[in-house]
Length: 452
Image (cartoon, rainbow, N blue to C red; front, side, top):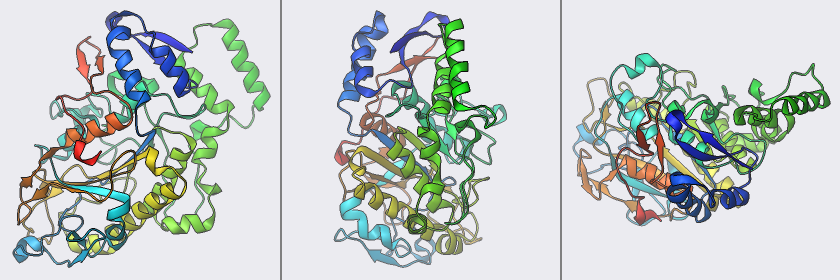
């Protein structure tokens, strides 16, 4: 079933119900009416039909990953740029990574590709996070005070234009939550698209392989209400109100079916699997993201951080080398490597796009506190699965890592690639609360074709 939804100021579009499966959705949107149905929805239908990926896991290294200490070391640069770490060979001849990500180094040839020339214009956390998570520049400094984004997050856009891959599931999940900068802002939220496209937050994930995970309270009915009684209540409400709100319908479906609760139930995983991913927050977050993909959630945003509350671990202004060596790189290296292996072993990697990125990189020159500061001029992004060719190192930075040398890749091109691989056309246009047309990206961008 597809219902026609009226936007503000009378703009209409066809909205899939959460229970609508992919094939039925495509049949319905192909016969949409009006200008939106005539021009936009057929494009969306074609894009979904030909999409390479059914799901995406976007791992955000909030704070900003240093390429020098990870995917783009500079062993020939002066010491004040080079840093303390040694480099190591990868499975692609002639390509080197940091010595502290050995597992990813082994998997470059067969599992993923790296963009070494990503960039955008802003060194501010607020503006950079807004751009990375929405595809739009941050409109002004007051956005942080408003505690919300002015444009919908990419997960909300995907949730609007794609139904969940199976009934009874959310279309968009955030691990552990949708907030950034200690939850001061929520750039991953739905903005003017409305509450039905907000993400479902997983809550804090265990920081060990044995600790029990408490499922989100939204996923289960009140234990005092028997399942049969809940179904009777839903049926009664449907008799009274034929115009049931889709958001409520999704909520009922998630309560009545066990799909979502089972998908989130990390406690069902064998101890050996939880240990394989890593007995820490990053490892358990990665494992939960795999469970969600396997269940049928189209988009999962993961904030890879040991401090899941603040989420700014990668902002290494001080003690960069100590933190990266002892706390950050080892669990990230293991969690991402095992995630890619596990998805491949389950036959899911080809249909699951995995992206790993910070909101920017770090300064070329080491500061007096043995740290690196914000640097948007050039940074690295990992991309895997979902139609991405493995073993490619795209673009390069200058000898000291300060600027892009070859093939600049704007971060919006990365987002365009995510949209394209998931079947979301970047031609799609929404209308905000003032009825202004709003494309999904603020600038026309093409996917990174060299990786496809």
